Image (cartoon, rainbow, N blue to C red; front, side, top):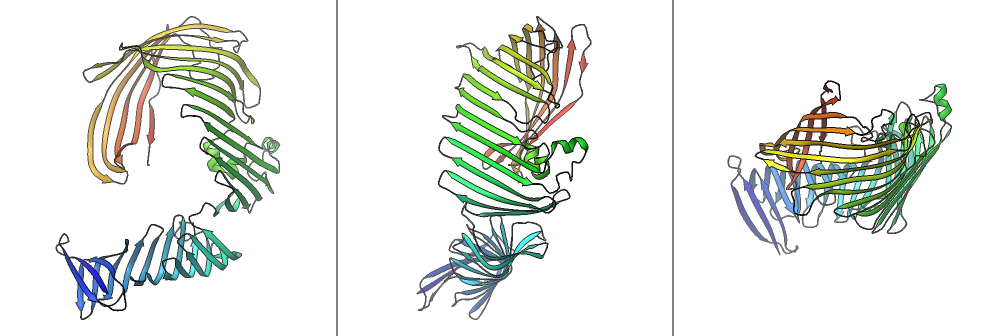
Length: 554
């Protein structure tokens, strides 16, 4: 039998110089084994050696680093001391010291920390008895990343089996180091979707909140989870989620209910109390069906018991969608033409609402034959029902709208210049004065810009490799002329404004690009602009200076 040790030595004064030493030994009781070692310095004393400084050892594709390594040439046992790190495909392990048998893959880890995805484990000692079993002594397990975790599971002994499940008995759930719940037995699957989610937090409104959320799979297409939500100031809520998916479709149903013990804890005015009851709930349903990427059908249904429910209990969901949306949308498109059937009718009228039924047909910007001219068109017939926050009808109308544009993109030196003309028609069956509105409109204008580029650096930074700045000053101008003129149309959407005016937009577009995973990525984009407007028989009036910013950290 032979033990092969590859010693890669990096001298302190010449870190680029590596000496490779191969030592072959005959050891009758072991089969052939191998490890490689690199360090700043290695000292030999008889049959033993000590490696110090940036120690790195590679055993069966697993790298272990430490401050110091002590071993014997005729033994499989090695001792690593100080800042010991072991990174594998399944987990990361950090320890004060390790005694390790590199041949049998067994050993002891002292004062160790393990990271399994979101799961953080600290143990006074870990015994690795085989490749598939870790025995933990005096373990603390949590998903809280604070230096002092708000919650953790405390257990005397636990086992990690096959690197995909952890089993513990006679454990305690601690909240701020106070034992709250006794857990006689838990087996948690680390890599299986059938796992258990646990969260805790505190707020002045809800008090301490605990979420216990077991997930389970019915079959390959249906996944569910049932959540038990405890709020110390409000009571116990129950949530249910079902996710269905296959090759062409994906649906999600979410339900929540709580019998609120203190429903007026935050919103307690006379008018607010009229909107809230003790029985509080929500329903969310989304469904997407795709025939192709250009032909699909989307549905969303949302209903809340009151406007304050998600703002109080599910703040993140509330920020994403302040008012519940309900719509049906069918899209049929190709490279040139896109059509949509759209229906929006909110079930909750917490704020001003625009309910809409619309059929639209659009022609995307396309080249006319072999000419340099491009054409695009927007056409829609819509039924619009506008409500204010007191559920009073402001306007209800049938709208016809068509707009057709011609563009001629030109390149003049460094200058991009795109003149355009357009014409269209709009009709509203009812305005704020209860009369109809019939209008033909025409317009012309141009868009002009130029691009300037500079590479700021090519170094690796936290946001990516290199940084390129593109500066694009631009001027957009348009003149609008309408056959009819009125201020009696409510602005349902951006184009519901008909003025005889000149509009000019002046601005600077700043774009910062970097490279991530060998692909060009937008890091940051900032627009600085102002808009000037001159109506007929009036002076030119500029608005304030606007700044729009977008940043991408992924």
